[in-house]
Image (tube, rainbow, N blue to C red):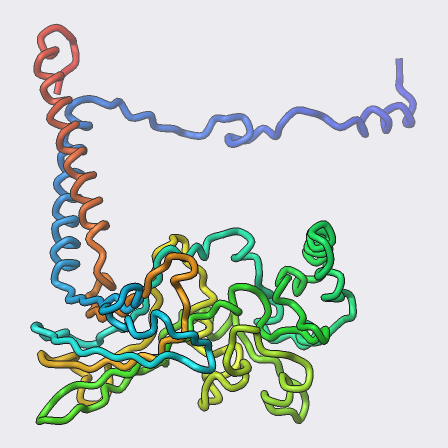
Length: 380
């Protein structure tokens, strides 16, 4: 019986579920399944173990060769460094000035990095980390202006109202994630907004070196302390036609409550001002642990290009940043560097431990193999 053309067309239009007749779809690709024997596994374990141990010893030795000194200046007790600031009521505009001397008994080869360290400060708290506006920090003008979609008076009512206001804020544009450091009482947006920016570390340090009967100031370099990607890509200043940076910010924004100066006055250097200020960028990269260090300055210029020589040093501190309210502590750290970065013995220890485990299990499997060699058909 012959089929009508219409029936033939209908039959051919039915899709087929059969895969293509290729080596990949039909699972005919060539494969190799290694036969794991003692002659393969044991040398691998010993080779990997000794290799990791050798690398670990090198890393550990390199870490130990890095010079580092740290000084706690929390001033939590009378007689401590900066203890005179214990009972002083200070703020960002009226700091407590303290200073102390210290001696270096070893040469710190340059470049020397200067860090500040905070403890018991949980930058990894979810609500704290989320309290920022990356769109605003990228330089978008729309996130520097009041949109009239939030009234601070609403959040100043009952606890239930505050909770509702918080939920409302987080459901809106990215800037609302900055609540409660989003708008001031006049509904003017903060720039930068959020809890992360508001809590920026603001202690100021000045280091001097005692030589020939006088103190010589050690030049502290603030350029190059932030990640290249943060400075050049993630953070940008807003721009507007025929307006300076000050004019862009000044008429439309307010400084965060805990800041002494607005964001456009963070530095006299135009390339290090506003949202691209490197101290600000370093702070905005939140830490994963409650105790952390952040790079403050580099010592690599002037008479200290080769590092910090042996001798007496004088450190002056504008003590502004409060830590006793959350049982925290503050330290200043000086560290040299090596090819692997700063001092970090953990990496070397981890390599040594892993390599030792490989050697241990290699020996264990070798003993098992020798004991069972005569009772099995396995060979080397």
